[in-house]
Length: 332
Image 1 (cartoon, helix red, strand yellow):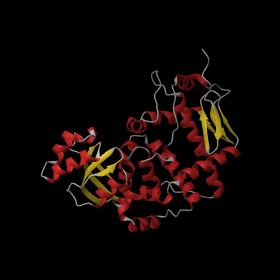
Image 2 (cartoon, rainbow, N blue to C red):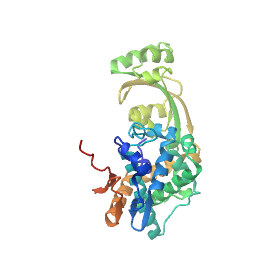
Image 3 (cartoon, rainbow, N blue to C red):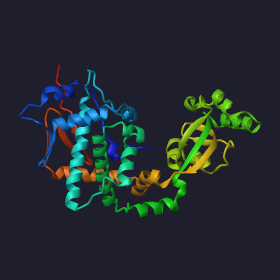
Image 4 (cartoon, rainbow, N blue to C red):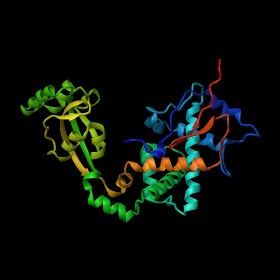
């Protein structure tokens, strides 16, 4: 699923500079990483947050495709990783200040905050690998972002409202497990389907002929997900097939994003409401929720007095994007 605002760390570049900053770059005259109005984000707090994130290998693995965390030296992080963590913390300070003025908030004991934080930071196992102290911080951050997103989208996120939506749309919260045999062309897929109709073994055929090498080794098994997740990964036609077809019966070829597939649904089961809470909230917020938060934070940033320690770079606002950008690379 797309990474939401609460997990958006930005882009990252190479970084021995950040390690130097952490070790010795902030003297008694510049003890801050950033100032947001009268509130100070200290270098020590920034270093601790970067360490907490980077030390969780399970979490880092979930963002490794888009974010380079570790620097080239021992115990170093990339400059832009540090900047993105700092930029995120600045945004959260702005959100906290705005919520205070609005008199809004969401309890950190709310299952909405707790479960959404777990999901946003790599799942329950990855989240549990963070120190308890930092888990509490992430839950608090998530509560603030969720409260703001609910305010901006005018969404009722009370538990009764979430339960009502869940009860009315069970198809959106059903876990579907399935198989497929992927082919590059429709004609190739039709030939595979004909073999299956004639009694060929699905798993053996997947291993021998599927162009999806990852699932082929597992006999075509794709794992489990919701309709929306299947739709995002494989397309609407495939999602509709595994959501409605008889179980354990190969279906006629349908278009996928990477070719044509013979799908077979293995099981479908309703995900319990408690586990579905983050998905229900995300569905109610819709695609505009994160964008609304980003735009709102940019507006707050434009009106705020924000100072970033020059050693980390500078604070830039462009349209609806506000971020810390690295200092210029020294000329050789």
